[in-house]
Length: 71
Image (cartoon, rainbow, N blue to C red; front, side, top):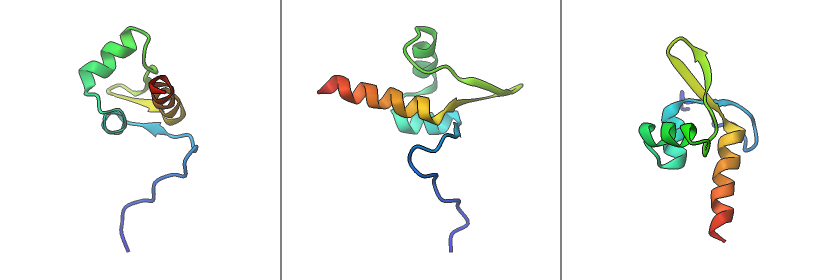
């Protein structure tokens, strides 16, 4: 058996760290922060002095909105 935890079911709310957000969106850190500053990307929440995270539901909704714009 693997020591890796199973991914959460789709729709389960959790906090995503930056590397996960980068993997989901295909964007790098600088672009994500530029979009946040422009109000075009979900805001990160402060988790600690040097840590931030994003709400997984907000990121999934943002991705779904981008997909619907393509249609």
